[in-house]
Each structure stands twice: as structure tokens, then as C-alpha cells.
Length: 415
Image (cartoon, rainbow, N blue to C red):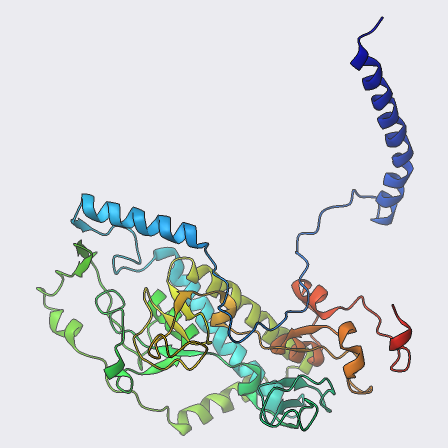
């Protein structure tokens, strides 16, 4: 007589064998559907249409708070064990990360190509129309603006939240956030409130490239050849006793606007270079430059610190945020106008600025009743796709290319 549990195990195993035998034709059919190969898992995760966060809520932390507390305790323990020590790892010790210097130059050149390509797509001969709302920050790529009621500007209630469209510019498509330039990233990482109008401001992506090794004549920065010391948590630099000390102590020159002649000559050179390029090829190059810039910026942000305000879109490149009291977001009275700094992401450094995706450029405008069937995409992606560039794989699910919206008079019949 077999044990009491053995018979049940045999019955269950027999059922499993029968189930596996019945699933074999299904696996074979799936293999045939995928072209004779075993179905592979999706390498690109699914990304749905992003929903705007509430204005009074703080942005989610990139690193959990428990991990941040554990890091702070570890740094405090190391500081107590060795009060005077040489910082070994760049860029905390003031030196550059060697393998990221080339990446910084690639990001800088990709940004230059991207700006020139977007300017030609928006203002060129075969310009793609861009619309922006008169009362809010909504942007639309197309001849006619959409009819989706999402306006939150002044007197939006009297217009049933409808947008009032007007012609847009390149700034509506790009929109890089600005930050303060740090002449000495390690020696003086903060900008106080008194220096609000003294320290120059520049695009944050450009400041990240400068701190990573790109030299820009208009924005001088201090380059060290020896690591700095940490004495009781304070940075001490002993590199000023050499001949280049006078050069290191020279403050940055006051900021001045670029001349119109230089910008016009650069635009003429870009037009002369891209004279024979078709719109589709220009769109593909511009989109690839944007993707390269974002991926390179993500690699730089793993080593070089970038912080953002938890309530407003302000960004600061550096180990710490500035002390300028200019925040006007939620709960700014409790902070005396200062920002609530936290770790930033690539979307904070290069905002995607999502817009509604239009499949048929010559069709009817997007209806408010069918907005659940429409997809979204970053404004740059939508602009380049409209110009003829292929859709990137990571934005296919967000644009909902596999969803067929019903007719306007049939939306109430769809479950």
C-alpha cells in the first residue's frame, strides 16, 4: 500500500503532464507566429501616456529615503574616523572623470546639431507648423490645434477649458531649463541670494558638459590637477602655491548676451551645410541627436550631481543646490522662497514636453470625447515624426499606434 501522499502526487503529476501535452500545439503555433523562433521577452518596457502630477504634491524621489539616510550615516562615520583625508574619487575631489570627457564632448556636439535641426524644421522652407496656447504652456504640432479641454490658464472656465492657439516658436518645442554657472564646482558649490544677478545663467545641459570637461570661452571654470582635502567636512585646496594660482583666483567675467552677428553667421553656416538635405533625413538626424543627447546626459548624471526642486522645474548642476530665494511653487512660504532640492532625472534636465500625437495630419482635429484613445509623445519626437523620421521603439507604446479610435459619433457605443 503506497503512502497516503504518494497517490495524490501521482494524480497531480499526471494532470501536469496532460496539461503540458495540451500546451505543446499552442507553443508551436506561437513559435510559427514569431517567424520560427522562440518568443522573446520585450526588451523595451511598456510606457503609457504620462499623467501630469498635482501642483501641490512633491516629485517622487529617485533614490529611496532610507538609502539616502544610510548614505549620510556612512559619510558621517567616515568623517569621524578620518577628519583629515584626501578625496580619492573624482569628481568629488575636484578632478575630471577621464572616461566621461569624451561623452561630454559628444553631448555638447549633439546639442549643437539638435538645435540647428529643430530651427530648420520649425523656421525652414518646409516648416512644420507649431502651435502654443495663449494662456497656458500647452503645445501642439500641426496645422490646426486640438479640441481637447485641458487648458488651466486664466479664465479657462469661461472657455470650457478650450485652448486659444497661436503660432509657436523653437523655444516651445525645446525649453531647456537654466541654472547658475559654477566657476569652482568643489571650492564654492553654492550660489547665495546676493549673487542672484552677478552669477551668469546658462542651459543646464551646457553646464553639465562644462563641468564634465568641455571648455567654453564664455563660461570659464577652474580645472584642478591635484585632488582636494576634506578637513572636518570642509574642502581645503592646496593648489594655489604654484604659478597658476593667480589664474585660478581670477573671478569669472560678467555675463553678456551673445552678439546677433555671431548667431546669424552660425545660422547661415547651418543653412549652407544642410541645403541639400531632405526634410525626412533632417528629421531623422535631429531625432537621433536628441536621443544621443539624452543618453549621454544620463551617463554624465551618474557621476556629476544634478539636483532639482521637488515642487518647481528649477534645476542646478553641481553637488548642492543654490540658496537663491526664487521658488514660487507650493509651500514656498514655509521655505522662505528657497527650493526643496532633491536628486534630478534626465527628464528634469531635458524636459520631454509631451504633446498629443496626431496620426492624420490632414484629418479632423483631435476631439475631446476621444482623448482616451489618443497617445502622446515628446514634442521633439512628434515634430521629427511629422517630418518623416521613423518612430523610436521606446515611444511606440506611448503614442498608442496600435489603438484604432472610433468615429466621433460612435464613442458612446464603445465599452
